[in-house]
Image (tube, rainbow, N blue to C red; front, side, top):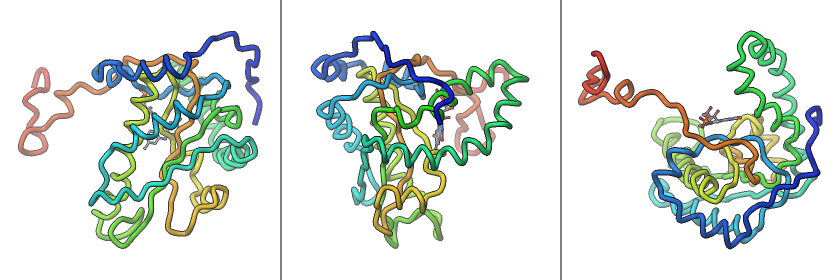
Length: 239
Ligand SMILES: Cc1cc2nc3c(=O)[nH]c(=O)nc-3n(C[C@H](O)[C@H](O)[C@H](O)COP(=O)(O)O)c2cc1C
């Protein structure tokens, strides 16, 4: 998958590890307001010391019953990345014609699609793929009944993922939460060598940001907040 070529003559100077670590002092509100899915990435490596600090901060997140049954698989090996790229490619190619047709009809869709296309077609060039995995138990499982165990399973991963996204934003790394590249979980598990009771939940491609951060566009708060019962939205304008 290399239709969109990668620019290897990249003149950009990235922050040193010391500079990047210092940038973690960014005000929380600024990080939260501007964090967004940044898919266009420089292909230069990301220093392990920086990455480890970000992962450490990520893992300050809560988990159900404080189980902390996480494992992060950090993929940097080119062959491993290529295997995941091949898995993603099957799904990407299946849906590409539909997406391209929609993009032809609407420039807004094309603007949204272009960074996704770049990433899908250069997946193995991405410096780091972080794959948060969580152990399944009777109490916490990705499928099944009661629903609360499913909620607790995924809910034990996504707070840590958001921490990581915010930390990446602060230091200037581009990152995004993705699920499609590991869509066929049994195959993803085989590639990563995961034991039967450990599932990959999502994948976070990381590299120095080429795309822009926010501000992001989200639905107005008054539209989303209901007081006491669904439907009572006193903060919605004009209602
Ligand atoms: C559960 C979940 C799964 C996602 N899966 C993908 C994905 O597979 N590929 C992708 O490019 N983006 C994926 N995203 C990112 C969203 O598309 C993105 O966050 C959303 O469009 C908002 O974009 P923004 O943060 O840049 O405003 C996912 C986000 C979430 C929360």
